[in-house]
Length: 418
Image (tube, rainbow, N blue to C red; front, side, top):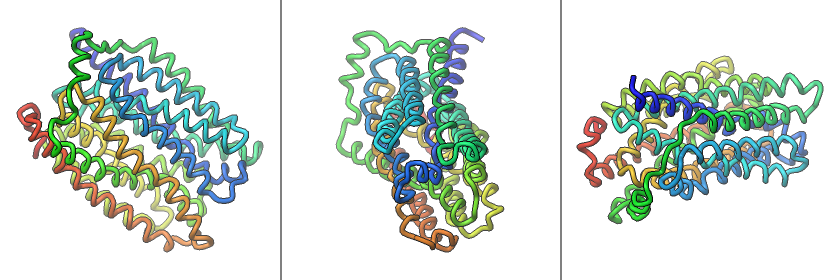
């Protein structure tokens, strides 16, 4: 194996490892909402779920600026520095004495997390111009691991410590995962190969290159981003709403809720590379198929018995989570390399800001149920709305396909149009 191939494989797995930490911090608080409510003496659980929404707003709001940097400077440095800030935010959250300090901590964590996706996705798409879906699916394993470990570890650890620490038990797993992230950032800086930004002339040319040359392409891009924000809303809501639903309507504790939520992400460690690879020969077909299956599973969730929650979450995660590397590959192959960081940054800014309002919204929706939150039937409409959002998100696929055709990149990625 030559040096170039070794560099690509090494970079792929290191970026995948950072992906795990980025997504641990997405979901670590979800099993802890009720403990946090008691510890901070919140009037409602909506204040706890709002912390995740604030973090995600801070995560997605700077994404375009991070995309600009990803097209101009070392992506390795962006990735390592971003994880360091993200992890320090969680260390600070563990010691937050009040709600204001907790809000500041999750904002810091969110800003740190915003470094990852524009730099990582653009880097992988450049390293793997052929087989982009498979490569993004492989780093998606990192996201699956992080999503799996985050809630199962925090729920288990908090439940174990609750008899000793009371409601403050949520702080210990948050601190431990934050410290681990700091160590991982240092290790990444030591092991990762530098990703050079290119010559001054190359960077200047990239900066001058327009994201989209015509208004029609802009409209298609924005329409696609808004459509996929509906998928993102539903996916984020399945975590927060699932945690509240299982704990209030089915009597789960934080440990069992964390175990159930981890099921969403466990199977995606297999499905991400599998469907990513398959989609390299039929992007629209495979992406549409997994999302349609997800629609049925989301609508069915509140109707099944409590003991079916983990198997259903496993099945849902297997199909739904695999849509992410496929859509990312479709987006990256729709635009030239010189603008990929900015395009992806803008894409997740739109989708992320709209989609991650879900944590606060579902928290408020559950609060308004009152005592009805203890009845599964109270959740039927909410889960039906989420299923409808995933269905509407399919409108984003023809938008990305049309961009690629009009950008004249169909020859480069002809096999992905089926």
